[in-house]
Length: 378
Image (cartoon, rainbow, N blue to C red; front, top):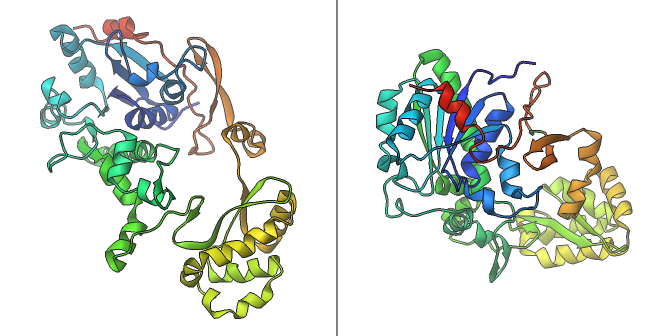
C-alpha cells in the first residue's frame, strides 16, 4: 500500500525528543529516515533505561521505522559520505547543540547553497541571536524559562507538566512545517531553511496567560488539576473512592451543572452568574461540586453528566491508559519490532483512512551503516 511520503528521504542528526518524534512521524507516513548517530554512543535516549527488552522506553517510542547509520563526522571520509547522502535527500533535520553544525562545516546557508532543493530544519532552544542563543536547552529548562511551570502545580509549588510539552510541541511544529515545505517545493522546486526555537513554541502555548498578564498585570495562579481561567473545572473525589473530573466551559453549561447537582437556585446568584465571577469564587464553587460528587459513585456521576451534556472524565493513571477500552476497541495498538523482541506501540494519531502507517523496527546502533556506505559509495 502506498503512503503519502513514499520516495521522500530524510536525514537526521538528532537527539532526545523534539527532532526524533518529528522524524518518526515522517517515517510513519512512508519517508525513509536515515538517523546519523555517533559511533559507540548514539542518541542519548538510547541509554536512559533498559525497560523494553533491554532498550530505553524513550528510544523505542521515538525511533522505530528508521535506519541507524553510525558516522564519525570528524573523519573526512565519513563527513564526505554524509554530504553524498544529503545530495540525494529531501529533508535534513538537526537539533544538535548550538554551533555544532557550523563546526562540522554544515552551516545552514552553506547547505542551502549546495543543495537548493533540500529542506533544512534546525531546532534550537532559544533561536539565533539574543543573550541566550548559546545555551543548551532541555524540556524542563525551556518550560521554566517560558513560564509553563509557573501556571502548573499549586501556588508556591510550581511543577513541570509530566508530558515534555516543550519537546513534543516543538516536534509537532517541525513535522508540520516540513510537510508545508514539501508542498511548497512541489510548486517552486526550491528547498527551505526552517529554524524553530523551543522557547518560541512554549511562548506560543502560553498565549492565554500572556494575554492576561499583558492586559491586566495579574499573574495566573496555578490550581492543580484545573484551569486558572475557568470554574468549576477540576477533579473531585467520588463516593466510591475514585476521582471524577468535571468542568464547565460556558455560562450555559453552568446552568446545566447546577441542575444536575440539585442546586437550581444558584442560577439566581449574581456573583456566580459569569465565569469570571466564578473564578473569583472558586472555593465556593468547588465546594458545591465536591459535596455532590462525594455522595455519588463515579459511574453515577459520569452517567448523569453525559445526560446533562457536561464534560467529564475519570482520573486515570498510566497503567489505566495502557488498558483503556477506547484505545482497544478502536484498534489503536499495533506491534513493532526491536532488537530484543516485539513491543506494542500506538498507531499515529493522524492518518487518512486509506493510509497504512509504517511499522519498521527500532534500529540497533549503526545497524544500517554498511548498507548505506555501499549505497552511497563515491
